[in-house]
Amino acid sequence: MHSETRLSQLAQLRGMHPDVIRRMIDNVAFIADHFRAQKKEQKISEEWSYVAMIIDRLLLIIFTIGNLIGTFIIIFSSPVIFDTREPLKIMPPTKPLSGDTFEYGLNSNITSF
Image (cartoon, rainbow, N blue to C red; front, side, top):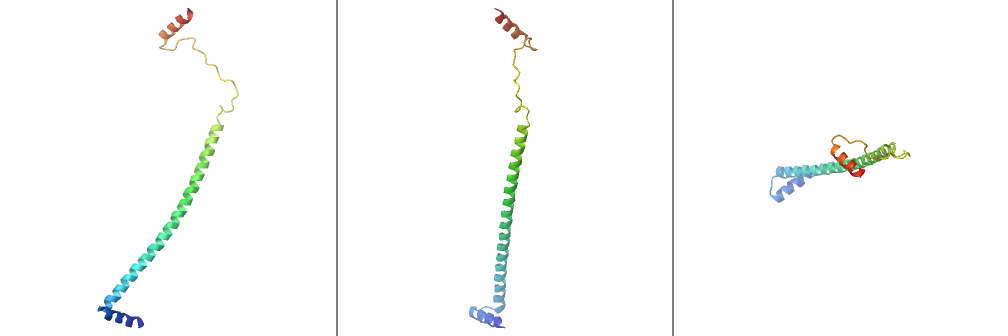
């Protein structure tokens, strides 16, 4: 009842009908509720963004560690690293390769002099 009298006094003061003032107050309350809900949703969105960033960093670290371990396993499983034998010596060919008969003949004539 007290709010009705205040609404009537406000309507008389402004020169408006009380129903118009009531609708204006309801609209302002609706807008205020909308902004409160929007702020709450934004806070929830920021929290989920933070969680996503943490999971992203964690997966990046796991991927990097897995990648490095895999690389070291592949490199250290290579037989070349632990092979202590002397490498094969590269010797010049004794016969010409296919298509190299002309060059082979020139090289053998030059070295025979």
